[in-house]
Image: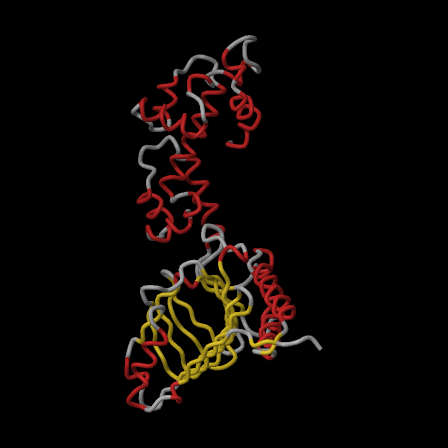
Length: 339
């Protein structure tokens, strides 16, 4: 038997305090991540027990509560995604712009940084929290909330894995703790795979909507009215949600700007000489040629005029300055990537 050690652990229980001290104790423990909506929730018959372990880089929690309502605080971690299994009772709340409701026997994934409000009703919840980077969570790709409904093999798997790991706490050997943490991380990576999550209930059905928005952008790159407000109206999303969808691209405005530059690159390279740099820039709504030239050079590393007509010629004239520019050759080879 390997030597065991105590997994780092904290806990809170309202029963550990006399009634007159429960309010301050609860506020202090929950702050600054969450704030009780009603301080009276900490008094009277309502109870809360939280146990928290730090298993390698995974934070595990077991929450048992009667009736509590919490809103997000100022320091809620923005780069954590959580997996929750509702063993008893139910949980309601808001993640971003979307409401959710999870009942006993169900599990859900939620972007913790987007939790705005959480309400419990006589519940017991087992949770695991992960840094985004540790499980490959990407806000521009993955939804803010995924519900796994009861009586499915996926929920059974989540319940068994979380239950097994929790049952061994706090006594794990260092090696066992690492294996347990890696097992949970691996499960979470698998749950975030679109093929696994397919058919589950999404509070934010982002993946097909992002594809549709990108198609809309592609067909309207030469339209001057293509802006964030237009996309919001077309797809019925808020500006905040639209930004989150394209956060990895710098937001929708940056995404449109970059796609216009890339399309201008293709048109410049394929030009037979009938169009000038200024005309192609104007086609993609860059009316200030100086601004276009600066943006083009910043993105591609060379002036726009050096790529004009290059694809149509198939090669650069021998001895020309352009032959000494490997980045142009590289982009000519890969320019279909932008189409």
